[in-house]
Image (cartoon, rainbow, N blue to C red):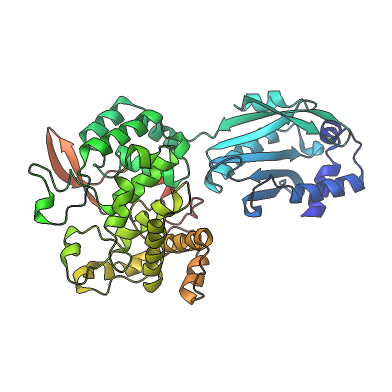
Amino acid sequence: MQAELTEVFLDSKTYFQNVDGVQVDGAFAHQAAMDTLEALPPGCDRRQKQCLLIPDENGRPMAVVDLIQHYPRRGIAFLGLLLIRESAQKKGRGRALSAWVEAFAKEKLGCHTIRLSVVDSNPVQGFWEKLGYQATGEAKPHEGEKIKSQKRLMEKRIPWPALDETLQYLNSDLAQKDLLTDPYWPKWDGPWWRMLLLHEMGFSELIPKPVVRTMVERLNNHYLRIFPIHSGDLPAGTDPVLGTLCHCAVGNIFQVLHSCGVDVDSEIPWLRPWFFKYQMPDGGLNCDNDAYLKPDLPSSMVGTIACLEAVLKCTPRAYTEEEILFLDRGAKFLIDRKISLGSSSPNNAEEKEDEQDWKKIGFPRFYFYDILRGFRFLEDWSKKMGRPLPTEAFLEDAGRMDRRLRRRSYEGNRTRVHENGEWVRKDARLFPLLEEVSAVGISSPYL
């Protein structure tokens, strides 16, 4: 690729005159190609970099695109370079290539915004403005080979009707009304699920603040603050479905609110202790209330994973001894189950039937489990806690899995819908963004 990149740079004399103040020759173009291939912002992983050579209709190198995924933060693709060789310009290719970059950043990199910088000495800001880019007001020094200038930052939200629909809904009076009716139901198109999807996509910063604040208020005022196990745990008049939370719900909403900037431990102080209180002897949890009354206390993968993730990812300080014990026991639970085995207990026989589905990756996960989700937790636990991962084959196999979606975990579910003052059972409802990012067969950029 270096040779082809050098060829493009040799035919880009005006660009390098503007940004570096030099006349391009073979040596300069060769070094510039090497520098472009190696350039990486501080703190970025090389896997975030996409340096792409774009051919023309005859297969000849025509342009170069250099993108950094999730920089300077998740959901943003930084366009370090979009350069079309001079002999191929003035044919509408700049506009066409920029549209291709937007689609690539959205579909392959999982980003909603493109950011770039324009050097003052290179008069192309007008081109980007015509394409919808806007200056952010930020500027940084630019030092070319022989030119010192300023580079101005510009951004553009990638056109995305399905994402816009979800954001408009979450920012609406209807979303506030729906939260007041019930924070959790209905599946899958209520505020809870839309917020969770945006979080799983890495787009938590886009979730409107008013709906976040209402969710915090509803969690504190709508739900029983314990997981009812014994007959006397449920106060009179409390609906056992609508008025209580399960473990996977607690684990997931903790992660969503934390990623939205909420100090969950301060504002909802009863959530974190929940995880430790309901961990079973084998290190797991179970969303089936009756499981805690069974003699063998059968744990559940689905009821466990989100709680483990919440403590591991959402603890902005040193872990306490209680948290370390919780995480280590949870990791042992997953390892003992080889991240893929259902419960051997006859009191949780249903989970054994789910094993085959766990090998099929789906997105979003919501509260569902798959072996890649289990592997990712163990990988993060090992790094953060300094614990060695087992060298067993089941972990190696999980780490090599591709990101192609094999199932829609949420399909076939029923939901509760509030109609005419009553809750009725109906098929679960979808929304455009959920359908778009969960299509079976696509390689998901969010996993």
